[in-house]
Length: 263
Image 1 (tube, one colour):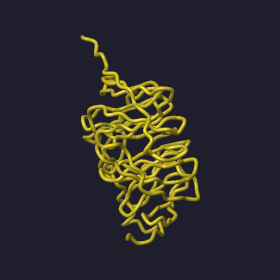
Image 2: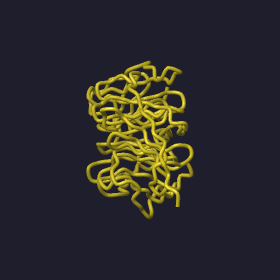
Image 3: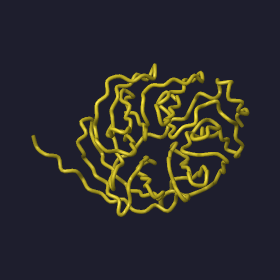
Image 4: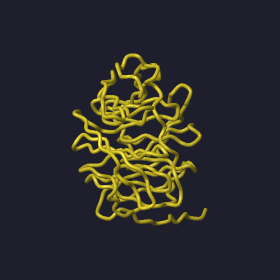
């Protein structure tokens, strides 16, 4: 069998994402959001031909680890609240978390020190997997959930209808973050690289960072945004794209949050 020689790319510094320690960028197809974990802020921007452009800052009082888009605002992880576009907040009856994601069905997933938890659309929180989770992403066909754990990147069989996982197989031994492109390849952040790997873990593309450690990545159209351990952001155009972030769909029918009506 012929050996695959990965394409090598270099990511440059991206200055459009304001913040002392940038984390968790998410792109909805129109709006780019990210959090400044050091100052407790959700930042908003747009993607332009010159890269990301900052347009607004929303300040929070509690701990902020990520923000998932929702109709009318964002669900903020850390000390959980619903953040409206006008900056008002409403507490959510959810566990404090170290990570927050949304699956293709619009359900929230929360990562804590001891487990990975699914928030059903009715509001019930269920523990799905044990141990900490550093990142989550789903394949385009929704049949695979990629999870960054202490053991690296793990691919779990996934049942979208029920939100349950099945057989697990390791893909990459060391990983800090993960994104998936429209072709189903996983982009794995770790060390000073982000690697595009197939379902067997073979790398087809390697994006290198200069003097930085990659901890997460996100597609904003054809741009791959890479956050680093020192809070800076790097970017490159890898020749593919990712699907926009899925919005959380649980709030309108969930009466326990006490959140105000949508604008």
